[in-house]
Amino acid sequence: MKAVVWQGPSKVDVQEVPDPKLLNPRDAIIKVSSTAICGSDLHLYDGYIPTFMPGDIFGHEFMGEVVELGPEARERRPDLQVGDRVIVPFPIACGACTPCQRGLTSLCENSNPNAGEAEKVMGHSPSGIFGYSHMLGGYPGGQAEYARVPFADVGPFKVDEDLSDDQVLFLTDVLPTGWMAADMCDIQSGDVVAVWGAGPVGQFACLAAQIMGAAKVIVIDRVPERLAMAAEHTGAHPLNYENTSVLKELRELTAGRGPDRVIDAVGMEAHTDVTAIHAYDKTKQVAKLSTERPHALREAILSVANGGTVSIVGVYGGLVDKFPIGSLMNRSVTVRTGQAHVHRYLPDLYRRIRSGEIDPTFIISHHLPLADAAHGFDIFKHKEQECTKVVLKP
Image 1 (spheres, helix red, strand yellow):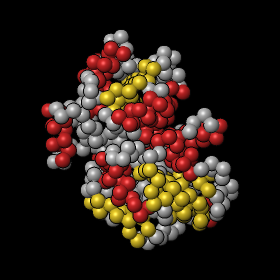
Image 2: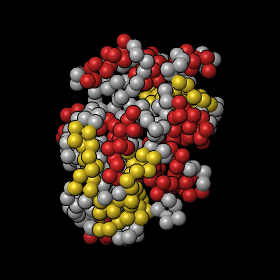
Image 3: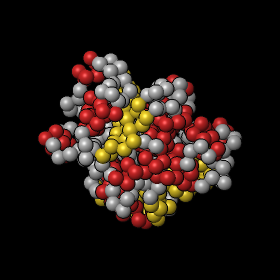
Image 4: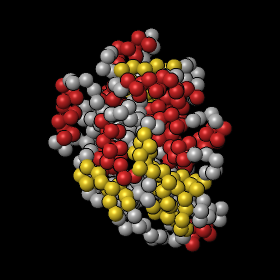
């Protein structure tokens, strides 16, 4: 089959690779109908995530048709059949461990066969993730013609035939991730919410904050078309950090208090104006002396109101330098974070799409054949051709 394979920093290729096979009685094989390039794929593409190796297959946002189903998966989940159309959550979850039972499926204790590698970096291991390094399981991703899905009695979520791939594909990751970012804020009536990053996750975090009752949502980015998209589709107030002082503007918009809740939807490759601190972060990251460029995170922490909440869903891989712990501690700021527990949010978000309350298709800028994946990564990374989201069709 053909799959999108990493060749090294900023190099991908579509290559012929062996077809996936059932390796466990609970596995399924999915024929992929749509798969998307995620912003967090760019961290892999740029070579910043440890243990992602040349030859590894990208992709943790994918959906398609069940074409093979292991005997134990059939027995445990009789409603799932060969031929069913499904979406696949990006965290791989067993459904039986304590975190899974508590709805914390991105912390599954049984889905990462390489947990020891993650423990060296993080202390404990999160769940395995499709196409996201050997440290997180070494699972081939779904930017391919076919994908193997472990714990198929738990993960795949059946979708109705009358909903298009574009309507449901983002339930695999970016929509639940943006929704969880707002959910972790525990938004109260009258709250002001500020969101760093107007990429797909940031767009959905703005939308979720509005639905959850925020009085005002402010989105911070530097890409005009992304800011305009957030204003049009989520009602967010746009701030272009290249044209203003974000901290000063946020104080002016909140009578000096700062936003009540802030969301970091940027993660480890934040950009900022050409300043000494940006040069410092960039130099340390390129020299492998630090894994992160945490400018958005620092700014979010420093701007949030006393007693406020910082919600972090932008992906970080390791250690942060110059972290404002004094600001957090002395101002009673709450920090909540995590990879999205997609399985927990799927039924409710699917119902909202089904009813027409949410139409996530507005983030799509490009549909490309799988063979053009390298072009898709290039324009997505450099934000060319007004690229906000690429959907690949195998």
